[in-house]
Image (tube, rainbow, N blue to C red; front, side, top):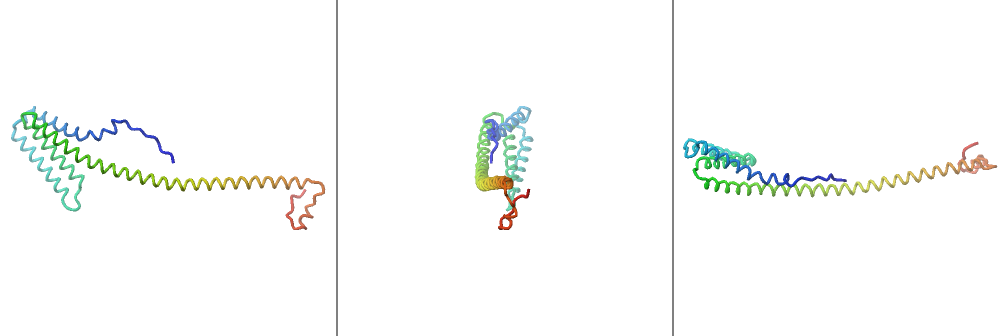
Amino acid sequence: MYEPITYQHWAIKLAPKAVPAVATSTVLILGRIWNANGAEHSTGNAALMTVLALGAAAAGGLASAGRAGDAALAGTAFALSGGLALAGVAGYADGLSLPLLLWALATTVAYSLANRYWRTDRRESLAHDRHIAARREEHAHVERVEILRAHTQIEVAREASTYATALAEAMTTRAMLPGFDPEVLTRAGLPSGPTK
């Protein structure tokens, strides 16, 4: 009937929105650190990253194949493949323009994919909230009816108690009257009062 009031700081609400940019930026930074430590123009390191990226892409393709494909596993494998490709280019390239271009492209793709899931999640959340509100209204109506019924029963019981008390007082008062004979009432077919 009463909902708790919850408040989330704006930074907590916006934190999930920053995850794609943080992820791609982290890969770019690690690739550039790798570049500074000797990966620049290293064919062995480039071949390693190429094999890893192709392996992750193949795993994503296998995970999404068929009717029983796992979308979450495939998405993770494809994201890993893209991240490895970005790290490989960032580590192999000698300038910063190509890694930055790939970073911007990867961030844009990550946000476009994440936005799709965020919209689906928002739709499902709104549908759930509407369902809960409808159920709450339905139960609130039943609750209001039960509250009215309980108040009515309490009032009836209170009136019955008041009536019983008044009747007991009247019978006690009647029994104290001079010349009262309960036997006369019994012969007349009336209920007898308390005997003295």
